[in-house]
Length: 385
Image 1 (tube, rainbow, N blue to C red):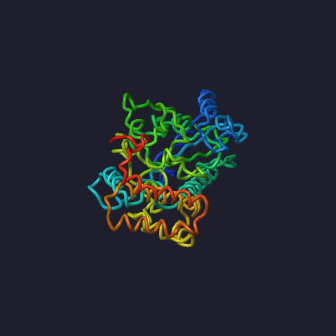
Image 2: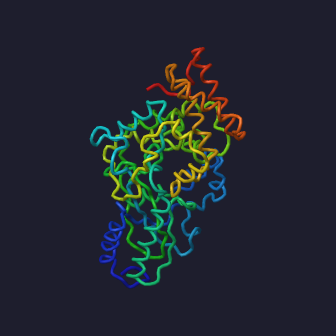
Image 3: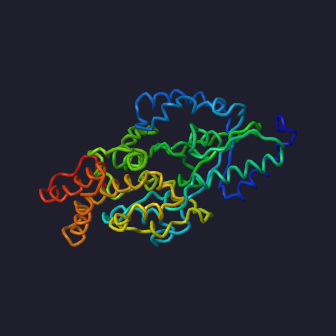
């Protein structure tokens, strides 16, 4: 019997798995709530300042590793995986070879690269609604259920819980990895007072591979399983509110929202699964945009095109900041041409009305023509490929 609910667990769990599949989840598991062995690593990461300006990480501290403190009464955490690789390549590329398509995008300086997870609908909304629906179905079967759903929305050690419940293992890039699905998936959790049977961990399969560590443009993976967020392009373009440190700007290339390099290079992502949900289909305006296309957006355009998208949370100012850096990198990387002139012209035209933050990055971008003309060496932050 499921403790406290009088229902045979051997009958309940298969039903929960079936309900999860109907709701679009690719896999679910169950973790125990004793995460005490993860506390030293979490504290060391915080003590090193690797969380950067994400003050909420420090504020919550070890509460992340203590589910019972976060939600009193919790005895199990139901974990869920939802694949997000869009149903079709964008733009069309070699059949089944989405990684090649993405590398090609990164090698075209005039194009804009948005992390794949952010090209469709905001996953927070998608997962939260479906996790709640799953919790409602469980409650209908077992009676009153104390629970709370999370999807990257509270101090939760998501990867740790996923690794302890058979959804995968922690890769050297610190993301969850699955033999059947790579790392192209979202995670969500239901903290509950229902003592479902724990599904147990799986073995790690990174072996001696260091591809993700080696490929990181800013060397943010300072050691296997150890990420300094302050160097990470995803952090710099999304979480960081101030000026992007000069030493990382060239390494950003044409990445304007997030970075997928450590996932693109991972051998396990040849098994990444296409999403079955239309929510994660790529929006037309983000399918294959150029930097100039996106630079021309007014703030009203930005708000319209990012409605219901995770991109909206950074706001128009940071969006322009990121674009200015990418445009400067394009000016420096491309041969002199009408396109270079158009990029410089668009930057210069925006300069008088730009905010202080955006102005600084526009001025840096315009200086890249001079850097190209004097053939200055490339920044050591940009790794050789």
